[in-house]
Image 1 (cartoon, rainbow, N blue to C red):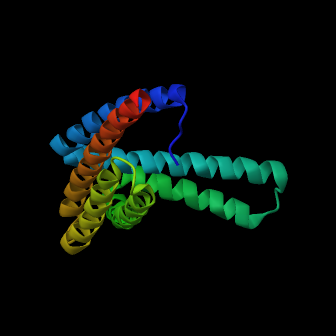
Image 2: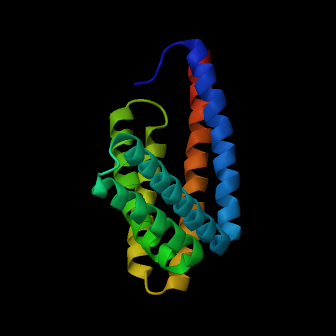
Image 3: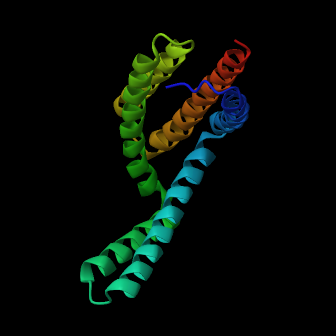
Amino acid sequence: MIPNNNDMLKKLSKHATIAGIVMMITGAAALFWPMYASLFTVGFVAWLMVFSGVSAGYFTYMTNKGDWLGWLKSVILIATGLFMLFYPMPGIAAIGMLFAIYFLIDGFSGIALAGSMRPAKGWWMWLINGLLSIALAIIFLMSWTSLKETAWLIGVFVGISLLFDGFTLLFMGSVFKNMDKE
């Protein structure tokens, strides 16, 4: 569903354009430095897990100090996050598989979005984006043979995905801008 309000279309156009440019720059950087992109991704996920573990522990402490499952969840999240921070290569392998699953889900959702937008301008961009994500997932699963290759693939595929998502947002920003004029 695309809004009709001109002010909303101007905001959508502006923010889609800004987000598209930022995503394209980030994607290009990940393509130039794929190993660093992989390590950054693992570090980001690891810190999210540590933060989630601390939050789960705080919640368990405040609500039911005797809830051993709550404490177990907290310890597992913190331990896994710290393990990934100190030993990033196994984390890269795990995240590699998660990204393959993510690209499949992203691809199918992009195709579904294209189908729901089909009569509107730009629907084909979401279709291409979805098909590209599915292709990335298949390539990743077929090439997943070593940790070094997995790390390289994570950085490259994150870069490609961000680059194309950014391009799609940039394109949709111009579509929203043109809808505002109509």
